[in-house]
Length: 507
Image (cartoon, rainbow, N blue to C red; front, side, top):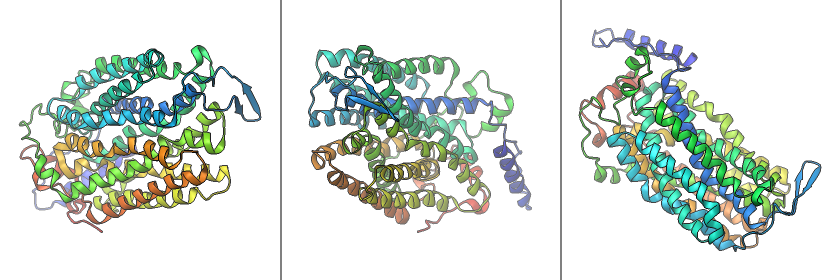
């Protein structure tokens, strides 16, 4: 692959540049990514992300189907499918109850992320993922049964699903650094993160089509399907994955040698055990708080689209369930298409075109400000096509923040404590998950376009604040309290040699 070739050239230049004889480290070529075990681990992490977010965001379409709030006619192009059984109002839940059902998952999500990050940092994440994903499948299977016994039981199940998801996400983020060298971090992390937009792209139309089957009134299939997929993932991961390269029976000697210096970064397999996590220093660090605020503001924008787009399309466009599902998935195609930008960010850093700080801040600030302008203007576009174009562009460029921006900067900032740090930042970043539905219920009680504009203004303002905070206070320098002797030193040296190492915050 081109990644391997350019990486080898960069390492060769690094050794040649040291004329004083200080660089005596053996040159290890980068094994091809295609067909490698580290690629398979990344695929497992991608699909784990996909399933977690599928369970989270498909609930919006399921809710439209369960309450029968969509039109009785389901338009598909120039045709209209008459299916009153599909939109039969099986549950009579008001707007406030629906908001609580969508938001309860996030209450659970914020409770367990720090715990998930700590467990994966200390002991490795494989068993935690197997257990958590098994429980996620079980709860997904159980929703149809309990919903028909009593609607409020969904609140408890969604709370449990949130707690399970809170264990999974930081564990996935913690596993990846053990399976990639720093020069591949942007590429593999952006690949893993694409599970989020992929779930948004596929969950809405798939759920809409499952609902349209009319089998058992349609909507139970929207919970059985992700439950089956999650169960299959769990079995495959149990037999085919491991915490570290040293523990994997099928890894090649070349790949194992290449990953040797990085694989113990978050699991103390052969390295000295990590000291206690420096929570006090972490929570009094200005750059770390800049990362927290930026991630929080970014999620306000993301969830304002992911959680409410099917409702917006239903209330403003007045489309049926199938067309709603297809349109709700459309904006996420752009995020998937822009997932390659992770490799672009690696290329810019590896070839010293821009510094690490310039790349991370550029991939964060520019997309966030552009997103804010597009969404603020969207409510004033007169045509439905124009509104969907603005939504699609805004959602698409959000991927830049995740593939090359702040979202993959935890390892740069806190080194071996990335799992715990991500648990903290992503816990706070989930607050918009239950705030957004409440705001929609309060500011858009009738679902008119003028009411929805207020939601768009709030989301745009949050994105702007996040961009400004990260521009002036964000940092990519490894913090002094995160430097661990004999654990982090080789990574720091290998990651950003010579001029690439950027120790100044570029405003």
